[in-house]
Length: 167
Image 1: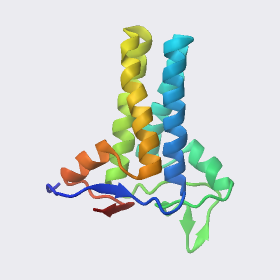
Image 2 (image 1 turned 120 degrees about the horizontal axis):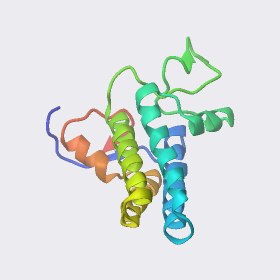
Image 3 (image 1 turned 180 degrees about the horizontal axis):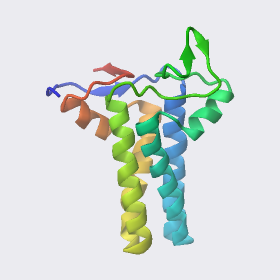
């Protein structure tokens, strides 16, 4: 990966599956962080679920929420060949996984961090909920603005994006 300059932003001119998944996941993580801090620590398992789903998306391309959105008629930005075969849309949505690109790195990074921090918040100290709350907030900002701190770090380190614009 070669170092770059500039700002990385994802496309925000329409609501595609991947962008809506970030919004839903970020909202779940933020709300679950607040509920774990104020109501019951077992809400951290909701954060763990989001983290494990994110890892699953990065490794297999399959996303539960993405498929629900796909069945509702929302179009993906980076579909896999299993989703779009010979110009025909398949019955399941899979994110493209034929190569490792920036957005896949984000899914794996966020998934591992959410999984670890949610379990640390549940079993060690609730202070870890500040981190999960930050990740949830950053993911919501990413969905609305297209700007992500982690994406820009990976972009500067040379990761190749699939759904971006450069400023």
